Length: 412
Image (tube, rainbow, N blue to C red):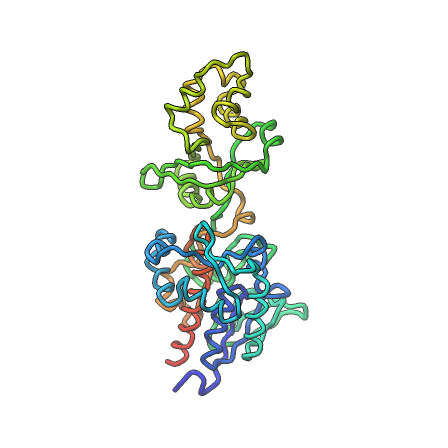
């Protein structure tokens, strides 16, 4: 018997991309779908993430794309086999949203906006028959196994034939992803890896003078050098920003998983920055060794190395006010400026989180083995990826996988 023959009801909890994709998939199969969202409207984090330009996905070739998911590449790769970056671009085209590949390989809508895509998506879901229930905050299950929600009209219990939980991670709690789902799932014995900040900044003990004067200053271009978790030296060129408490930005986010796990293991971690990627060490030392002719060391740095502003301040931050006394040491520091990271910024500030429902607790269709009929999708699962469209693509793909899992489960 098909799942539509007896009009099974499916509850989707969470109105982000993973939940909306699961709702779209289940409804397309003829299932009755109710979507519950804690906030007043769905997709709030999606909208904020797209405020500076919606990075929908990435143009990496498939093998490199899948490798971005690190330890979970094999599992996430299975989701992406059903719905990859090209499929996501084609899906967006169905709403009249054309995309383009930026210079960094990231893929954006031509208008770079998230709102038109989200509005069109929600409108189409409503027209297809998906029922939206906003200001419904999920609190777990009651003794009868019904889903329990807090609503403006009091507590509400909901029964469903299958449930998809797509509740986000623990970052940006003001938008709904607050990790409150950990408690009810843990109480049911579901294995959960602790939530941690991912794609986040890191704290450094700047002097008050440096922090006050240079917070917000961009560092570009620079090359970051670090030691990965296997003890191998790594490097990556990019851009980052000095903050009042440390350092953040796209380059730092790309290294964040290694840096965070090294901090968890060792307590501190060292990061080195090459402030002059285009200058060989020998040439830099020769340039700095030229006569100053009465000029100050700061002026000499600017003329001979193009170093000024925050990069010069970083040199003084590391070497002290007498930095100019040893040219060899100055040149070496500019090429490999050491920064000691004390810890990641709080999880609430992070772009995303690592940890979540362990994939080992689920079957291949993302159904919880110990809670048959309950599926999970999106960022609440135990995987992570750097920024660049990888996060969003996997959220879509996992929502599709969970939605298809619901259809198969109810068909049985």
